[in-house]
Image 1 (cartoon, rainbow, N blue to C red):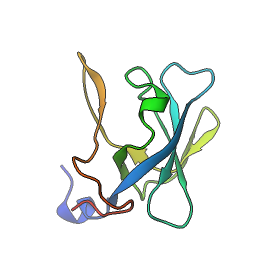
Image 2: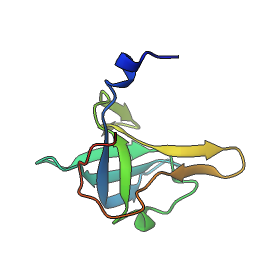
Image 3: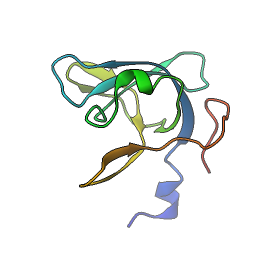
Length: 108
């Protein structure tokens, strides 16, 4: 359990996928270039390649953790994390929005 104050520190935002490419040498990693509503595009590396092809992600509006400290995956900096649900039978299921909404919109 975490406190409500800790939960409030997590910044969830919408982001539109501008480009997606498989990470060479990995079966599951995809590098996503995102419009997160800021002045610069954001890059996130995610382990969703067993479920999704890179080209089917372009244009989707997804939910990201925007204030997660960057880390490198296979030498590529990931500047946040996308949200996906998962179970053993289906694997990762990307969380998206039902309607179009401006990139960078806050999830509350």
